[in-house]
Length: 451
View (cartoon, helix red, strand yellow):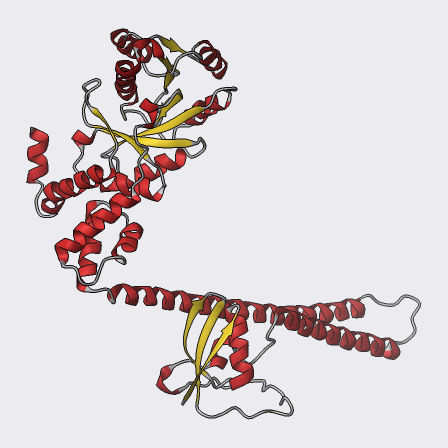
């Protein structure tokens, strides 16, 4: 048995090459995707003989089975029936034409045999029409059946190819070394997504032991995590904090305003709230403003926000507190549209997320706020986290920089400039403290909650 490779831009073209060069008895050994299309590996017992003429196709071909149970090319694409849809339609048209000719001949013969009558009967003509309709319907059903067979064969071939590709991926995963499989599972248990974890594991040096490889993966994670280097407190402009309810946006704004007032003076910072839904939202922010010594304003529409930003244009920093809506709340869209009504002012938007948010929830949150340009994110409530890998994985995959992290309610102490190494180190410590033991027992988590 000899082996040959064939390349085509798609599966149909590759199969046609195999059929034309090796004949219908060729056996498809394997297939895979390449850069320019599909590669097929076919086997044959003897050299194909060049044919001077194409013999007529048999009406009832017998399916051939190659040695070893592998399907032959004729079993995959079939040798009976038209090879293309155009040929099938042409065949159907020829059948209709032949039926029409037979009916026309039958009508002419009936007219010759029928005696001349002043009022010809309608029944014979109706009978001939019924004969024509029956034969025409039979031809259409025959063509429709061929189309259905072709569709079924294509669907079957697609399912076989998908199964083969899935099997190839599983084989590739099983070929990983035991240490790589172990590290992949560790990353996934820490909260890193399967896709990101698989990418990182492939870069693991082969000569490292388990601990060295784990530290290497953590370093890769910290390199992938982008930070903004204290951009809010070192720059001027208008900053809005957005995010779901309960993430700590108002408290975070108070922390940032207090830090900015300590550095540049309370007269250089101002606060605006557009949260008209939460009870006492303005009063809470006004209390923080009174303690800091900076002005606090309230806007109920995009026009009012634009007017307030114009009045406060001489301030070095204006912080905007927004209402907290679920990513599935329709009011979120109207709030985001408010920023589009602010003309002449560039508003920098930062997404505030909790460090203990579930991975799927955080992914939907980031997608919900993609309609506005996000400069970065602030991770809050690190002191309440039992796992940090989920938020790390999501911000890395979304390419969203981290500006600050918050780990408490004290103003302004409990906010820090984001550092990639510190965040990844904390994620690893939380996994070591809670994640590894949580698989067997929940006593550690229950003890922490009781404290």
